[in-house]
Length: 447
Ligand SMILES: NC(=O)c1ccc[n+]([C@@H]2O[C@H](COP(=O)([O-])OP(=O)(O)OC[C@H]3O[C@@H](n4cnc5c(N)ncnc54)[C@H](O)[C@@H]3O)[C@@H](O)[C@H]2O)c1
Ligand SMILES: O=c1ccn([C@@H]2O[C@H](COP(=O)(O)OP(=O)(O)O[C@H]3O[C@H](CO)[C@@H](O)[C@H](O)[C@H]3O)[C@@H](O)[C@H]2O)c(=O)[nH]1
Image (cartoon, rainbow, N blue to C red; front, side):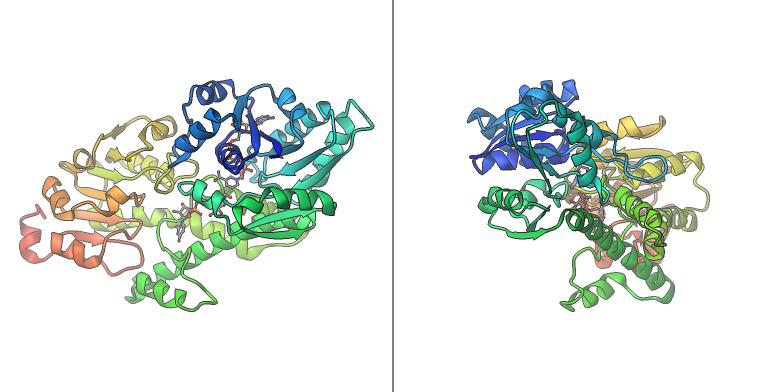
């Protein structure tokens, strides 16, 4: 059993802290956000993540997992200190490092015995060394030593616990082999591959991995846009490409572009890091631009099918940046809905989980429906922005009957062309041929 403190009880701190507790360690999760800690102590989980509530409850009950706002005391009580605070995008696009630096200062002030300081947050190369300097400069007990390790996190929201408990690899970067060995040992119950490297390379692996996945997404979205123009079907193209084991099928799902708390900010951050290092990363800049444009493909399709949007009832299905989360950070809905409102549409939005979070982010004027049926009732068009299971499996014939006009725009390609045809929809998706209505269907659908 190791004594671990996790600084920052956001998505990553909470999930990884609970997973470290689950494999038998004593974990203190601390945060400066008092409300968050009060909730967690009451057993309320501040984020929606399948399975997290049970995991936290189990480990709190068996005294393996604690929550506190006393960051200093939590640091003093452990031998391994994980930094898992946010590194959000700043106004310039660079990673905002103020939370990491304030955590480092606190560690210095409370370094009462030798500790291993582990960076889990996604940070620019060189941060480990900066953290070392800040701790050194703030130490109250000059004779106490410490080691710095980088151990970036690769979990995905929505499947965070299984990603953590069954991680593909643990990347461990350090200039001290003994510290790297101890952090490797901490990961042995996960039965994963341990990849050891230097501090800088570990920090770079995280950005390289995320920006590579973002590149795959922008690449397939660009191919999808060409498919629409030349009459090909991107679903078949991506399946056919993915069968080549050198390419692989993952992250080749065309849609309305990537969102979330990581890809948008990490692509910008790496573009900045490379500019600063004197390298113009043109490829990455195109990935970002392609992604920004991709959201507007929905607006183009609406314009083509409906003409103007003024006075039109638009049902928006799905608000979160992906299914199984209520995280709204950089969700495509945050770009598309304000645009719909600006053009005079009446927006009726439905999300199985994220409506409350969405209300805090979206402008006034959106009507939030409590069911799919309610959102589509009387709609001129339904637009799918998030592929929740409920939206993937909705009965299209039933949905069509509730709508005023039978137009479905699917930004996530969750329905088959055949299904849309059989339900009598005019159906537009991303990179696949449109489905047009038969003449009798068209006449019975107010066209
Ligand atoms: N969200 C993800 O899916 C994910 C996955 C992998 C890596 N990451 C990376 O992990 C890091 C954390 O991401 P997140 O989504 O969990 O962030 P988050 O914004 O959800 O949470 C960060 C938490 O840190 C707390 N905090 C800030 N300064 C603090 C301080 N000085 N002391 C104590 N607590 C402090 C905040 O109050 C907040 O609760 C980021 O660098 C992110 O890029 C995130
Ligand atoms: O084929 C695909 C796959 C994903 N997406 C979109 O890409 C975004 C990100 O999806 P995903 O990677 O599943 O979610 P995140 O939780 O943001 O996880 C990413 O970002 C985390 C934070 O750094 C990393 O830890 C993970 O490894 C990395 O996958 C979402 O908007 C998805 O809709 C697509 O458009 N097409």
